Amino acid sequence: MPGSPINLSVLLARFKADLSNFTLKRSKFAAHKKYLT
Image 1 (cartoon, rainbow, N blue to C red):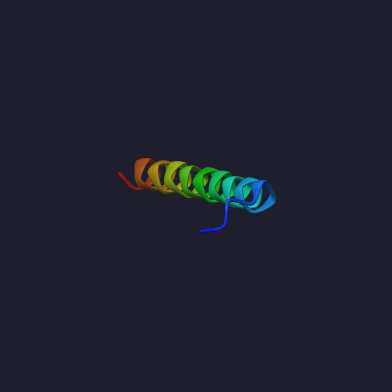
Image 2 (cartoon, rainbow, N blue to C red; image 1 turned 90 degrees about the horizontal axis):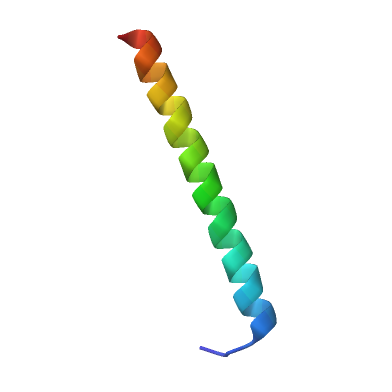
């Protein structure tokens, strides 16, 4: 794995975006479940 700092920052940004997207979906799903019950 090449240790390029540019690639590392891009991967980190992509990981953060995926993580925030996942938490957003999870909170939406939890709110949806709350409305259903």
